[in-house]
Amino acid sequence: MFGTESSLSMFLNTLTPKFYVALTGTSSLISGLILIFEWWYFRKYGTSFIEQVSVSHLRPLLGGVDSSSPSSSNASNGEADSSRQSVSECKVWRNPLNLFRGAEYNRYTWVTGREPLTYYDMNLSAQDHQTFFTCDSDHLRPADAIMQKAWRERNPQARISAAHEALELEDCATAYILLAEEEATTIMEAERLFKQALKAGEGCYRRSQQLQHHSTQYEAQHRRDTNVLVYIKRRLAMCSRKLGRTREAVKMMRDLCVFQLMKEFPLLSMFNIHENLLESLLELQNYADVQAVLAKYDDISLPKSATICYTAALLKARAVSDKFSPEAASRRGLSTAEMNAVEAIHRAVEFNPHVPKYLLEMKSLILPPEHILKRGDSEAIAYAFFHLQHWKRVEGALNLLHCTWEGSLSMCLAFRMIPYPLEKGHLFYPYPICTETADRELLPTVFHEVSVYPKKELPFFILFTAGLCSFTAMLALLTHQFPELMGVFAKAFLSTLFAPLNFIMEKVESILPSSLWHQLTRI
Image 1: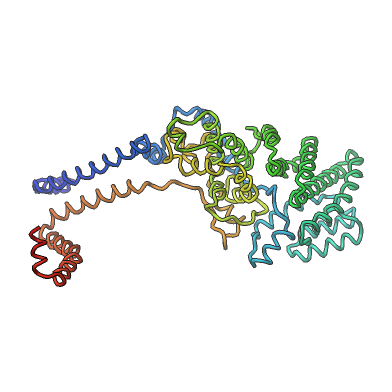
Image 2: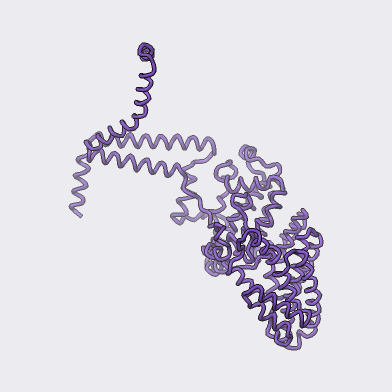
């Protein structure tokens, strides 16, 4: 330790005044560059660049917390069960708007030769079908016993053959469902099969409804028949929506939502029929009814989704987006309605930060999977696949989203008054770290690059300044330690740097007459 201190003291004593002059000059140069940049940045954007970087980048690294935030107390209240919430947010949910496997997914495979669904996704669907469409009393009905085995089959052709076998015994609703989902090659054919399934399913539902209180076995059978009936009606409503009969689809979905509220079966909530209803109402541009549905389901006690958050943001943006101008907002500030719209977009981005890139068409879309992970890339694809057209229909909505998403730190002073969407998560629990792993299982990574949680990169000027300081300090140290060698290196570097200029000058001298060159040099 003593030897190190003496060596350091000896090194500092041997430093010449030239070193300090060079170091001071370099520091002054860098300080001047920073001052000029700060002045330019403040004149253009109205805020300090260094202060902004300190708040945006250094505070999260140091673990700083904004104690003035009104939501910090809410976040601390939920700190005890944050791990439980993180696990629940990584739960995989069935996509409410999932496509038809035969009429849509398989057709994509026929055209492109690509498989849009992963094995993990299809395996989850098989588990869902066994949960929705089977019960312990299936052995009492031969057709249901066959379908119970069919839902466990991995081979699609084996499932289809089993469904046909079940239909030879009796009209089996679940057999029609399987054929409509996997064998039908068009939506019209799928709708025809679902109508046959509806007729058979209603008969089973009425019979089991009368016997549900006789025993637990009949009660389980009634629950299964209820799930089958709701599934069929939901898919029929989706067929109507895809075939252009949107008003008919809305009526069917409203009836399903009422039925879902009346029946206290846990599995019915997994269908999330209100998200189908929201999409259909947006297609009709019936924004008043959309707001009414949101008022019912956008509640703090209910699980959120990208559809809920971004539809609420779309309605707020619709009120101001047609006349919105970033330049005008920078001069006069944001109005109350504009501030509400921007805050709604920030809320949506905080819930799922992957959606804006798809809505702004900065990232290509693929077919949505049959299951989604809330707050993940799979949910973003599923939302943007069906709702991009609705954002395009509202004039200026995508422009406002773009300004808020990419321009909140650089477009105008009014936007910088609001926290950057990805840096302050007070409305929801912290973004779960498990989403990327689950999305890689749900999405076809062969031809799709999974979106990860967006992070702001360190600004170029910070990196440039740090590199310049390190480089000049290293040069000063090397010059002091090896003055002759660094002199040789400097001469070689300057000669190499000016070699092209010397070459050009020689060419010019050889081309121009000596008298003309003499006159030019005198000038």
